[in-house]
Image 1 (cartoon, helix red, strand yellow):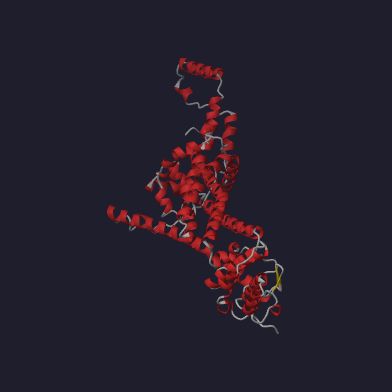
Image 2 (cartoon, one colour; image 1 turned 90 degrees about the vertical axis):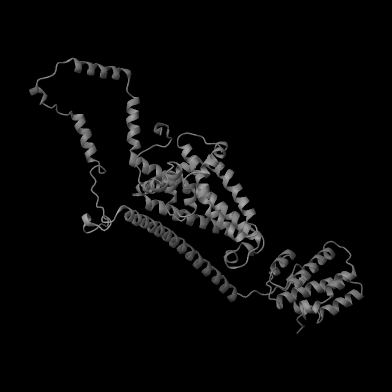
Length: 494
């Protein structure tokens, strides 16, 4: 590894500082990172959404499950950029097959998918090419002092992604014209959604992941770099290399002359050889400074479980086959415990989200129950008061047709249908609703035959009232057929 080519300044950092370094790396290399992200994640995500179109409710789960696959793309860009490589999209696409065949991919999508420290584990697989027991041992070493920070990074990014997703839904709910029922959170999580609604929700999820996931990979990679620098003393090695580079030719010639004179001088007597020279004052100051460093003289208490009698532990009395079997069982239990711990965190998050959604939903239901909507008396210029309608809408429409007034007949049918939907079907129309709003409000809430008949009435009324077109009498008579069965008797005048 050519440490002198690293573009990151190596120094002693706490794990929290290392996480913040990841944010700085993402901000500095944001252009190349997001080019790689949009060149891989979004095309693949759109393909997944189209493939999962018959099952849209599971598309988001598939996108979430495959996130470790796209994390490899981001780590490839960061690992190349840290050594000064620009890492263009062309280079990434050429290296993509190798990334997909790299070690740890299957484990990252199965056993280790729920690992809360996977941001720290991914470089062990992808950059060090470690597998099996070597990868587990390496991961234990790297996570000895910074696993907690890696877990908190996962927890923070998961919550930020959820918050961003809900925020996007709320913003669209505010900006989209109309009541936005398909975009409301309680309809999203508590009611039935259309395929288009699921598709829009999945796109919002991808947008939230576009903001959060690069930060997650960058912070995990910077935590990994900091831990390796701490273990392998990269900063000290670089300091010595800089000192070697600053050696001038004169200093090198002087050193060679001193060595030559030392070899030319006769060996001293044994009496003189026993006299050890005293260290210089500058060397003593350097030694004292090193000894005064809190890291050098640190005292740490380490607590761990051990057998009461280490010399006669049960594992030592077993043969190799039994010992290997027990160690394998312990490793399986450890993986199972980590998986259950991850599931517990996920279940806790889902339970918290469900509790929040239930509170919002029943709070909204309580508000609606306290403030029952009042049926509008006028809607886009039409009088919808029951008192304004005749006792028998169908008979009055027939009479209007006999007089040759088709517009009056259509007006009676349109108003009668709206009044019947409000008072018999309990459809809540708002004063500012348009024809499209009315059609959308009854969708899925009335029988299919009634829905189709009302759509035809609205379309016919548009042609007659707005288009000034002549409506054939036969068409109006078709609308009158079966009127009492679909809309019932209208509310009579008091």
